[in-house]
Image 1 (cartoon, rainbow, N blue to C red):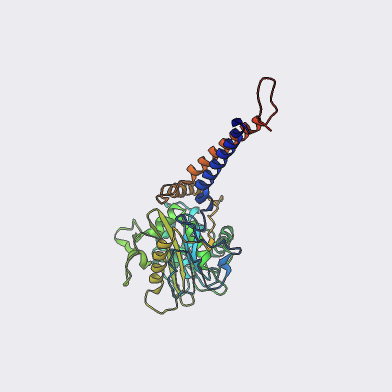
Image 2: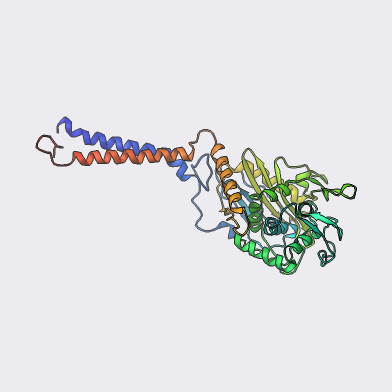
Length: 406
């Protein structure tokens, strides 16, 4: 074999090395997803069925990832909103009374329909039908309220009177319940049956930690929802002068009250309590570019402030585990409600922000997915060029040239 016969071999070897190098570079990006971004060695195989449908605590052990804390809640879910991965859960689809956490669904349904500066003079008919024992914001008949005031009453005071006034604006109590059910179905909340717009205990009314997480996630993509959910105190009504008074958010983990230390980075969302539901809480916190959402339903320990302290423990675990934890499921990103003006653009902007955060907060030592994709494209071109060169060298020699030796 002549020296010239080694040219195709050298070319083929170069192509193989190039391909192997590119595959090595692209490996973490291809494998990244449900198993974290730090180290894929020892990752368990992808589940073949939805673990969230299983009974009990769902968590995929992985080296370097602590087990979630043992808490007494009947149901809970921990979600990384940046990637929509559910990091761990317990009985995520168990149908339970939601209490006032159902007001997140009410807000998703009604909030986009009215300008915050619109004014409603509340009538006795608006306030008819409020259940005895309901939490109230203190709305008075024949008094004008801005829509923003009414939403402060919903999010901070969990006021059923504020819900009734807004439902009246929306066409009535029954229509609002039907609208809420339609919103739940649009979001894929299969465990939720709405019988009362304010979350008051009503026969046949249920939701789940999974569905409430869907509502919390969708709400945080709405600027007004996120602002109200994070508001600690407000003057009620805001422009009432001496007739107004201060109200404080009843979410103790947000404001720090009744012996609960506020949670660092908490941005809302909504708490609730009824006799049948027990304590419920949907809470979101942001640290270092990562936002976690935890939903906790009905702790059984009997400890004071159990719902807040169990949520705190799950948030702490989530922030520690999120970079490397394997996912047990996914919380789908909410599709824009095209019936609400401006929602599609807001959702697009929120998605763009999430993508920017994901691209700018990748841990040190890892290539950005876009850069890796560029390397892949360059590799395809390089291999194509090499393959073409090899093909030409294999063609029969012309009258003036020498070809590969057979």
